[in-house]
Length: 191
Image (cartoon, rainbow, N blue to C red):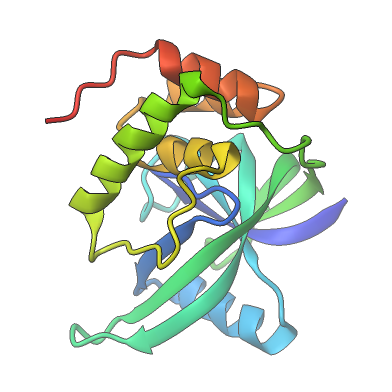
């Protein structure tokens, strides 16, 4: 097990995903400083209850380790960072420090073998390409890997407006092939 700081959010990031954040709370500014000093990352996990900026929130028991790949002070005076998802984890235990920062003892989840891109997933890749055109330039992937089934799965899990409990059900599936099959069964209308 490894102990890492946790950042509960209303959204998720998956491996190879990008997560832009604007930070203003002291606990998260201190967390970023510690990450730079120690050369570590932090965990992003989906909120089960509470609010992102509240004193108390409950995370779901899954998340992704994030490394900071870019930062600057925005024109709004806040610290802007971009995190990149590295690897998924399960939270074994979490607790809150006096400053409000959550810490978690996590176990990293061994990645499943690569998922083959099959014709049934091509429609999902096409929909993802359209979704990405709507979110750019706020979230821009220099290299879209639309023929990589795992990349497509991860970006859809991040971007689709699925309720947190339903998103957690998808995250708990044992591999991306199962996740993609479940996503393919959803009626995703994009116009």
